[in-house]
Image (cartoon, rainbow, N blue to C red):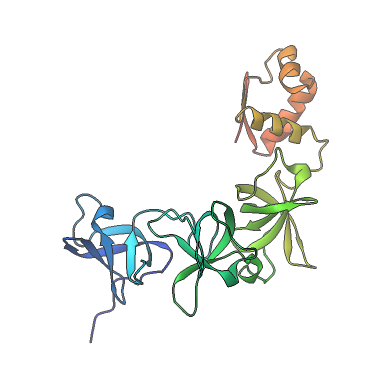
Length: 283
């Protein structure tokens, strides 16, 4: 009876695999069902048999499994914003952060991709070829089941496009969301990764409403959002605090000292800023 493999590789994901043996061209890693080559240029200095190595596994241009210690811009099951490096008769190829570009077949392009432009794509394993491919048809791959985020949950999002009410986003690489622009401290760019807060789940279409500020704070008089915007413009730091002269506060924020202190207090309670006697920083 053969012993069970020590590990089983995951295609398109970063993982730790053990070194089986060192060879002149690199090292072979134990992928469980088969050995995987880690080329010499990616082999950590001083590595030996039995060491665990953090790698990303994919197919090379010859269709062979290969590992790299480079970090891709997106993994299987994730959404990424990638630049198109070339277009061929078969489809488009996007720069991926590793030695090989990501293939996007024409059938998975929402609009015809062009070299030099960037696109938001979902990475998955093609059922026919068994290889990693990208798709710009996001709705085809995102979770259609209702999201279960509690109001106030902090989530990671990637912005896909502008909407009349704000910005359309993919939340945690799984669900569609809408980030309302009246809570945004600045203009958000397509493809930008941001953190936001869940306001509510929409039962009618299974989408999620989002805010830049925690639940309960988007209903204040707007001064909080204005101060956050000012902080963004000053790279997250203002050289004023509750002990600063009123004229300095007015010059930098346009607020009275009394209003400024009230806004600071509410932002601090919300966990959005850190305070010092003559300084405020955005978290």
